[in-house]
Amino acid sequence: MERGKRQAWSSFFGSTGFYIALLLCVVVAGIAGLFALLNRDGEEETTPPAVEANQPDTAVTAPPVEVSGVEEEIPAQGEPDPAPAVTVTMPETQEETETAAPEEPVAVVSPLAGETVTVFSVEELQYNATTDDWRIHDGVDIAASAGTPVVAASAGTVVAVERDGSMGTTVVIGHAGGYETTYASLQEELQVEVGDTVSAGEQIGTVGNTSLSESALGAHLHFSVRQDGETVDPEEFLGS
Image (cartoon, rainbow, N blue to C red; front, side):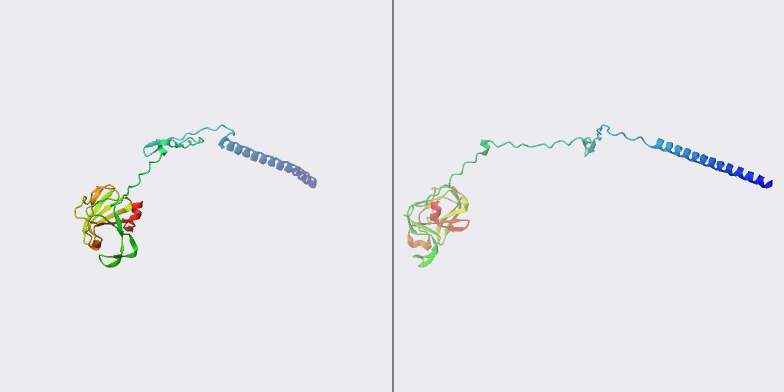
């Protein structure tokens, strides 16, 4: 009898325990689902709304910026920069392109009409009857009667008037282009002085025989030319 009761109770609690365990599982699952639902609602409330796509762009204008006392507006975002200014150079007119007329050539004349008795020679020695030796000659000697007018070979300014012990009374005239012309063996009385401006063909003195180193030639003009300090053949200068 006792044994039958124990079997009956065992059978009752065995089946009942199963259902109790099953009920507990359902309750636990429900509570877990409820907490999950509550957490999800809280996240949805705190999440900001999504920005809808394909919304039209809106231009944002930045406030003006003041730099060194000058108010300068910053261009709105998305607006193109203004195109740079273009400078157009107009062609010159015919009057502007016309070149200046060329300068007239400098007039050059012979300083004395007469016979050339000694030629220019700086490469070959020439005999000098006065000194009785051979030497170079940096100019030309032109014979003429004493007192014959001697003129400036070209326009210029008198830069020197000398009473040279060897070449006698001498006048030096400076010209354009670095030229200098020298007139020696003149008579003492001259028509110019240092600083005078002369024109081509203007008288500067008269033929004399004051050159001690060329006195054997008689009355004559010793005429020589230099350019930038270098000796030049007078015939080439007069021929220019």
